[in-house]
Amino acid sequence: MRGKLFIFHWNPPEADLLARDLRAANWRVDVECEDTMRARRRIKERPPDAVVISLARSPVYGLEIACALRASKMVNLPIVFLDAKDETIQTAKTRVPAAIFATSGELAEILDAHSKAGWG
View 1 (tube, rainbow, N blue to C red):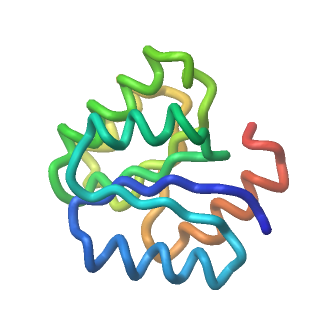
View 2: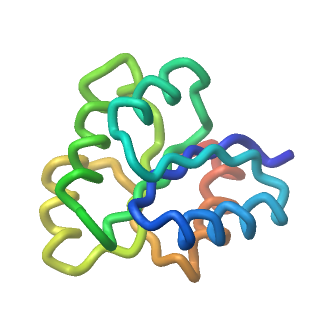
View 3: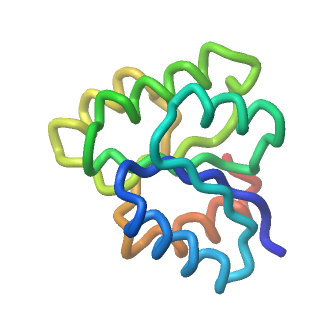
């Protein structure tokens, strides 16, 4: 196994497809699509190696989760923002400066590179 990821995505079919592809690439993957509080609890209970947060839909809630993780004991947990629009990227860089940005198409490559490098 390459490591454990937690994906937060507002679109369940897209999240399932993403998780399936990552599992096929030997990642352990947990997914949450509805409840930000449940996501935070699950991440705290079983910390992953990185959290992938889709900003394609409802970017405000995605940023909220990232900021809550940064404010908690999960402050050093790598966060990968996925599929953000340019204006959202600028906001995210301000609020979560150490975040990693990727598109769905490049996610596996980005995760692989960062996990080999020790996440920074």
